Length: 346
Ligand SMILES: [Zn+2]
Ligand SMILES: [Zn+2]
Image (cartoon, rainbow, N blue to C red):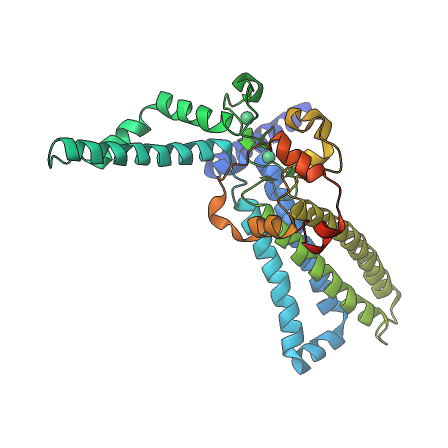
């Protein structure tokens, strides 16, 4: 019996080894569980929509009569899944990428200045910008000193770079960045690590994440309407059909409550330019300590916050400075009638 078990186990291990050699991306356990969750999410959508079509025979007739209505519903489900995968595979904005982008720009700027100076001084001797660019890129000391200078300007004067150096990545973090232990990288404007998406939510993909939960909430509402109309129809005369539909409807309602609360919470964060991490761990973040709870230190008014969140696609690496004392005092000031008339909050 033991020998048979050993043989089966050996065969299984060899089979797994061969499988992981052919699909190396699945050899990592974290990646496997992330892919498993993605498959579960797609399956949930298929089950919730598929059951309607399987049990509600009237729905196929309705689809023929009103193709635009059911077509729009199926298109929305598809668009939600596409949005899910776009968010899951988009970069949340890593500090290391911002550092590389910043250094690249700095190198180009320095080289173009040098080029023009050398061009002028040597009276027409043009030095290749490519060679200079490679020189700059191959000089990490210059890049890191540039990054250090850039980041330290964002903190209040007198701050030590040691306080903002990530112990895991050995990088200097700009304000609002945090190291994610799941991704093992420092993320700009870190919000949270989303298990369902298998990625961090940060400056680079927070907008996509908001649109994803918005689309998922609308899908839930629309599916709920279809479930209710099915439950009220005459076709509900078989007990097992009632059981299946009621269980799925309860599941759908719970998903809807969760998604709606999440959507409202993230809308509040967007309007006040905050992150989940900053809100939950406010007292633990050194530059937020001592700031009154009602003051949103990075908020620039509802309209500006909304514009920066939705429309500033090219500014993923635009870093925000910690507000000065004067700015904080201005934001902490109580609202007067004039402030309301001039829409100070916007
Ligand atoms: Zn880090
Ligand atoms: Zn992460």
